[in-house]
Image (tube, rainbow, N blue to C red; front, side, top):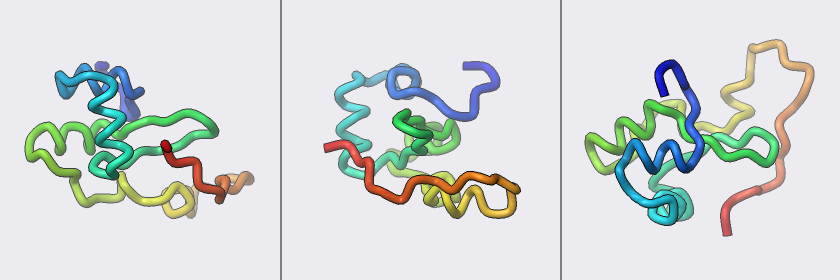
Length: 87
């Protein structure tokens, strides 16, 4: 996990030293915000690190919707707007 910015759920679970199921529960309860890329779910390394230190998410842009993060990047593609949350 040397230079990675986005982590998979198993990578975040390993970093937090908890199970994948516990990590998914934190995501479902919105304690850990995620970045969605298509059908993939990723967690920002800074958010996971902040959660590990404080037990709560870091209130930065890492929890912002993708459309806010993509503004000004010159992308020709718009992010999907439908809800893909874990249920």
